[in-house]
Length: 106
Image (spheres, rainbow, N blue to C red):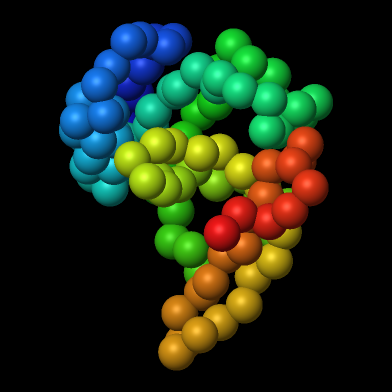
């Protein structure tokens, strides 16, 4: 399995971020692993700004509350904890939340 390291923050315009996120998604879907640097405080103290996070693709049906997932929302990547899992039309629905945040993600 190929592993790709994505360096820390860079000055990117929104279009660059979207293209980078699509590239990461393609790599993960192909069975690769990606290591990313974490920036921000939404997962403090479990993840701190500058920590490395190794990510692989997984079927949502196999993910359980308590695990941390990486997802794309409004052109940005987020790593937040799954706090609840339900099923809608035989498909899993994951509800996530940053550990340091007061409410679940939209």
